[in-house]
Length: 182
Image 1 (cartoon, rainbow, N blue to C red):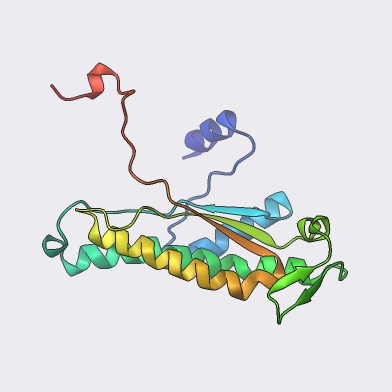
Image 2: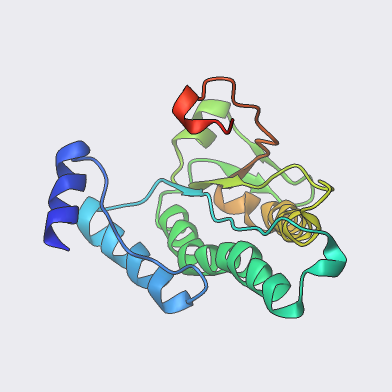
């Protein structure tokens, strides 16, 4: 295991190779705490959690469907639970530079003031939804989008932002001949 860690550190000294099962909140909490301890703070969390099975909805059994939701949706929820209080606390501990008007759901003050306030940002990778053969996967990713859209109303006052990224399907024309089937 040490050689894998050393190889990773040689490849990029600006990242830490943590093992994390997003389905288990305790492992997510450990990674968040270790990251804060090592780097001193977290500004952005990129969540690429995702796993799906190809097949018609009727052909996927309950076990497979629940595993996709457990990884994709609840894994994302575990990341949020482990980090939101940290982002919220970071913003609350600052002097009150920008006033928030809750009735208008916006900040008053200059955009520069808002940009300087710590809080945090999430980059959440979801997917296009409604893809044939990926029904349960699409449903779990659509659930994440609903969760994040709701969360943004709850966290706006703390300068905690989220960006949903929907990469969609990708055609690869760059495959080398040995990687293509005859």
